[in-house]
Image 1 (tube, rainbow, N blue to C red):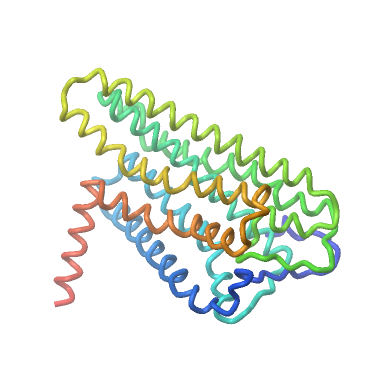
Image 2: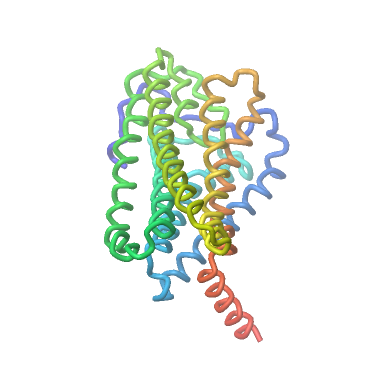
Length: 317
């Protein structure tokens, strides 16, 4: 990306060490690391393929699932190939432009993931509390506009993160003890004051993600309020089934995000390898589990997956 061709003082390369203290085990660590990435990639590509092929699935909820799948693929692919090069071949070097580009896509993808989860919460609220107007409120065109907003807003907010390091020079020892270029990991390589970097990153993370969580909580609060007014146990069960997959994805995404963000700033007592392993799991596990959770909990999707699985078995014979 031409925008990242900065005139940053020497050196022109950073060094990503992988997982500090566990260098001897990198090859073994790469096995589950690569397996999780491949499972996530296959799951999300399968979801995209099935939704694109099946006309009955061209609905707002499934379009949102496709957006989530694309975001998951983009975020993990911006990080995993380089990490595997470190684990397998000890290729630790990364250009400054490459590092800042990776940082941009990584953090933009994480924020887009959160924005999509908010839109899904709104989708569930309309589906449960106002089902008769669902088709008129949430059209495919409106979902596309919300998806575009979910792309543009994170892009605008995250763009300063790779630009801020250009304000100062980096020290001679630009070794990043990580598998990827996290914002604070890169900022700490600076010889100058990184207060602005730290505050901006923290404010963006907690204001945007905090606002997203408030909107999700509001949606579910309104859902619970409406569901409690209905005495039918069947209606309660239907509402629970509608929301279960989304709640599972939320519980998997947000706690690990806050842990990863806070430990860089306030987790001096946490061993570096523990923080980095958990930071990698935060990136890898949601993309692997998202399509599995939705495939199991969404009846229409589950049926279509079964249909294509049966076709593949038939072809195999």
